[in-house]
Image (cartoon, rainbow, N blue to C red; front, side, top):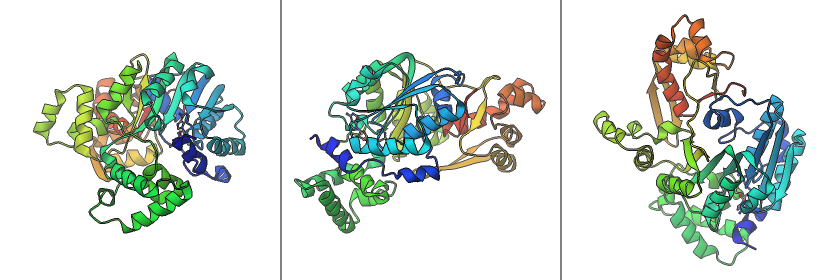
Length: 399
Ligand SMILES: C[S@@+](CC[C@H](N)C(=O)[O-])C[C@H]1O[C@@H](n2cnc3c(N)ncnc32)[C@H](O)[C@@H]1O
């Protein structure tokens, strides 16, 4: 058996207990439908229309369950296909779906290279998979071929610099664990980690923690038989070869060099094209472990700031955020060891307080007695900061 297939039979990833579905829904990126709408459908998709989705390399089902659950709650007629090589992972994903009574999912055990045989999809989720394929280009191409002309892809691939130390340690462990069964490999890895010198780059990289979460996490991070990271340029080139174009990273502001440079140098970076700017930001930040992004066959832009756009905050209360910005004039967040403080005019606070999905931007402007120009002057910095960190999305019909 292929070593990657064997790994996911022994350690379905991520480790999940179907009984936990009674307690919580795991939400993340990509594949939250409001996020899909924002990045791929201009925030204007009609969610009463059928939605065909493929979850390629769905693992134990995090993306699958979130998407299926949200579509059921919205009443969207959904056809969802789950495709994964690993029967053990499928068992977990299937049990999670059953625990929630989600019946719109077709489960398939197979290779994602067969994606086009399973239909034509409005959306494909492929998270943490392409970088494990023997020939990732064939995977990108298969997914592109399975997309409907106006469809889009939400995906995650590993990134090199934030994973500093991972690859030398993978090499060291490969030498130490050769010929051992997965459980014995985990034991050897744990003993090696305990003794690792303080000079080792993995020891020094404080931002990688998957190995502490579970044995499946440890195996995935350090014992993987096949795992190649993509830097920004490598990712854009792979998408281009497959006939796909990058729509956006889910946290686009992290890919702007101005976040990491003094003003004079930031101006210099502005002259670069978008890919070169993102590549520069990746090299300056040093903390990107993954790239989460949306791509499509037909080029497009994420939803923008128009009077018809319906803003929705991701996991934050509009009232609380509005009050905080009204008081402090700043949005703060932390990502992979870096703190960011972005200035937003205090006057945007009362506008954000109304961004709970009930009103469109034009309606918020009217409610606060502002014409569009005055409204936009306040809203634009909030838009840039919050969409920049995936905290604000525009979706007319999806919460
Ligand atoms: C790291 S897990 C990610 C699971 C899930 N997408 C997530 O993000 O939670 C990678 C998954 O890809 C699957 N996989 C790897 N190569 C595959 C292939 N060629 N075809 C289908 N699935 C594959 C593995 O079985 C595993 O379940």
